[in-house]
Image (tube, rainbow, N blue to C red; front, side, top):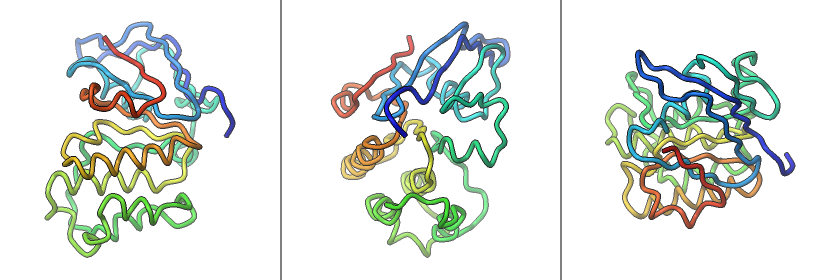
Length: 205
C-alpha cells in the first residue's frame, strides 16, 4: 500500500446510551506510520477504536478504510483491512496459547509472525491455558493474535497498560516494525512517555 490516507472518519456521531460521545467528528489517519490516539480517560478513545473496528455502531456519518465504507463490508473482507487488539479481550474458554495463535491461519499471517510471537514472550507460554495466565500475559496473547494477522491497518487499545518496561519496549518495537509498511493506531492515556515513538498524533479533548 502506498502513501496516503487509509482511514477517513467523516462527520460521525456516536451515542452510548443517553451519552453523546462524538458529534460530527471528522479525522483522517495515515496509511503508513504510527499514530497515537491521545486523550484523558473517558474522552472516547476506546469508543472510537470500537467504531473503527466495526463493533460500535455509528448514529450518523461513515468510516472508510482503504476507501471501503465499513458498514457495507463483509466480515471476511473487513478482517483483511484491519486487525484489532481491544483494551481487554476476555478469554472464557481454556484453549492453549498455541491453539489461540492457530486461530489465525498461516495464509492469513504476516511474514514476520514468528518474530512477533518471540518479542511478546509467547513462545514459553504456548502450552499454557490462556485462562490460567495473568492479565498481562493475556494482554500479550491478545496483542499477538492481532499483530500476526496480515492487514492494512492495526488498531491497538491501551496495549501497554498491564506490561512491565521490558514488554512495553518490545511492543513499541513491533509497532515500529508494522509502521514501516502499514498504518498503526494506538490508543493510550500515557502520552508523555510514548509521544516520541509516534509520527502522528490525534488528541481527543
